[in-house]
Length: 285
Image 1: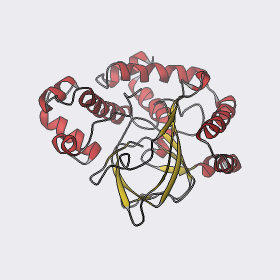
Image 2: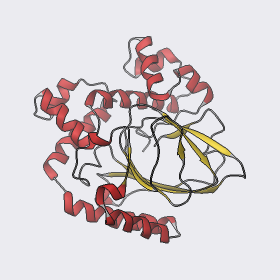
Image 3: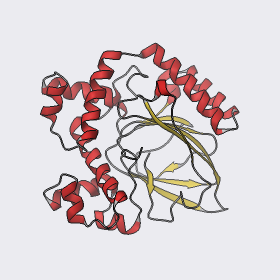
């Protein structure tokens, strides 16, 4: 979800440590990581988080009070929700006790688990029970009964493996996996025609299949990955100036660089890096 940017004091700076775990070897092509937080904010303390595009999707499980999304016409209606790819930012309000567990998917990792076009959940969060019915409720109950992070990881792995056996489509996954690896290797600086050629598809077919299996158009996805690479470059070298940062990230027009950055984060690059630490969820292994 990109819980990184905050115009108010950082959520991560005031909580207990975040727990992280890698997936098992068999799930590594589909799952990037698991993470969890257990925390109680001070009485009457409210924290607002800026959620930015990461190029990744997540399945979030809240075991206590759900956060409140502050953006108009956007809300979180269930404790277990699948968050699709997003191409803009929004703010989330956190208060009271927070207990959350997240499954972070690889960019192409969601497609083998669900049988619907993933572009339908772009910029949305969807209750898991709406997608898989009783199985979603069973997962929530089992995860809620577990008291330790490693137990929840084990439950999540078993659940994901059961879904994978039911829905796996090897050929299309390998095709899209190859395309995502190219996008990552080029840091988003590759044109759609080249990607379509690599996928052995015409451009129109490629754009349709990419959106169905990744959950967002290739044009928007390339824009997100370039944005994430800007964050990664700054994360690696905090002294890097804006001109060098934009050039090394594939931007040759400063106004284009600034406009893209602001559409992703709500800040100009200068504002963002003055107030917030650079951190890329996509390029951070």
